[in-house]
Amino acid sequence: DWVMRDHIAEAVEQIREQVGDEEVILGLSGGVDSSVAAALIHRAIGDQLTCVFVDHGLLRLNEGDMVMDMFVGKLHAKVIRVDASDLFLGKLAGVSDPEAKRKIIGGEFVTVFKQEAAKLTSAGAKGAKWLAQGTIYPDVIESGGAKSKKAVTIKSHHNVGGLPEQLGLKLLEPLRDLFKDEVRELGVALGLPPEMVYRHPFPGPGLGVRILGEVKKEYAELLRRADAIFIEELRNFKDDSGKTWYDLTSQAFTVFLPVKSVGVMGDGRTYDYVVALRAVQTSDFMTADWAELPYALLKKVSGRIINEVRGINRVTYDVSSKPPATIEWE
Ligand code: XMP
Picture 1 (cartoon, rainbow, N blue to C red):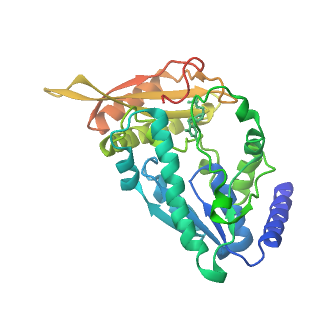
Picture 2 (tube, rainbow, N blue to C red):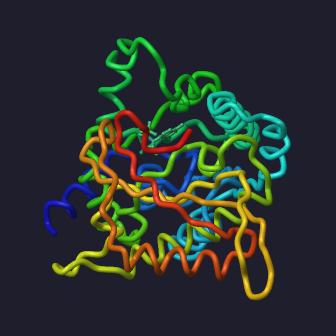
């Protein structure tokens, strides 16, 4: 639409004016905000933008490849993909406390990103001068004090405050006046696929907080495959109005439980892992109801996971609301 096209033209002009002929670095996570920021800045300054995509190995099935296909394959943007999965798994070995895991993942993420950014800024006169971030309006409000009033941190959401100063870079935040809905519309108008732009939120620590307790590569692989089946079927099943259950829920995912239970398969006994399916409806993520998914959908998902993912022999559905439960299990 025209309003959006005007907005893009204006934003592009502003970015060009601000940045001139200098180089920009952006941390691409695959999430909505950083993706839309990347697409917008790329539209404005093309190859003056370099995206750094730190793959911590705790992403969903094929997610890293999908990010690269989109940004490199389709938009022809410069993206440096850092495969840091072994590094992250190594640091997480033996750690089972949820907050400790978050701190390790968040801290390591910043370390790896800084190393890559340092390489890009040290290229003399042509070195990067800007750090772009997908900060949106609600983030601006949140960091303005509301957060500090909270007496207890229930879950520490990692953010990268102070990074531009530490790297000696100027900050570029082209989305800071926009609400989430506007960011999504902008993303679609910039040519990002709606499935990417209207995705459920995904936490920064990724599967690191969806594998209960210690994170292991084997667990992550099982969880990725089970979760892909759940999400695929949520996109397949529709209600009477024709909406998919993916769109009817605010957030849905699979949780890996590192306990084994007994099952039977063919003539044999199995002794394998358990997963929990979680799907919620909420308007603000502060409170949430568990979603009344159709039995036919649950049946299909459980049948497929148990048959297709060797190593998982039991699927459960989480019927806890927030509060007192949280949306994530950790
Ligand atoms: P909870 O589990 O606290 O989740 O009910 C509320 C929303 O926050 C997301 N979440 C996180 N996001 N880093 C993030 O970026 C985190 O450590 C984190 N923990 C929870 C969660 O997915 C839900 O959307």
